[in-house]
Length: 280
Ligand SMILES: [Fe+2]
Ligand SMILES: [Fe+2]
Image (cartoon, rainbow, N blue to C red; front, side, top):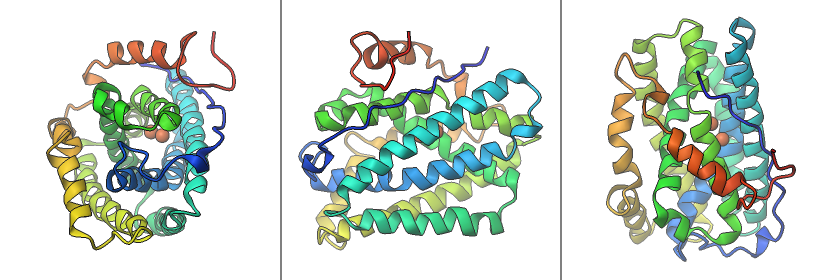
């Protein structure tokens, strides 16, 4: 039986303005990488929600419908929480708002002109695969948790957990509306190129506010982080390539034990994440 995600609402954090800009391990360059990622979440997640919701009426399986509703609830909550974080940064990193506005135009205005509904859903599946792979590393690799400022841990870990929890929802919707491996693979290749290009540009836009957009050391630092140590991108290559296999499914790797462990740590009675209402 497929996992049905749970919608949880994070209690709004206060005092985010006091979090230093080098909140990730005291490293401003790496912190800006995560800030750029946070800047793309609100509009990116709205795009995912639209892409999935557009197909909701075609879904006949009640379980998949329930998963879709939970997916929409989770992504909406993530967008709200990241927007609050991004706003707290705006005075210091105004580029985060520019990224948000530019991305809104790309995803809400341009993308529907270039791609049909099922193609936008395939793009969503591709990006959901990326986010789930990044999220697994945030949970699995203790170096990330040690680096994240304690005030931001709840937000990043809650989001990471739920990305793993709902990793297969968009994919299963895509399969159920007649998606096929060739289209999915082609759009993964295109999405990868666009994602890398846009993230590079958005990172540069955020880094510009700190006078670091054309500083070679900054780019070398981020490249080292992505490809060498801890190798955020390098580590996801095998699972990324698996996506191109015709029989691929996001839940084929059993993430049940990882989720069970983190459900207790984050949302259990002594859980680290302050929720508006704690599930029984
Ligand atoms: Fe999300
Ligand atoms: Fe997601």
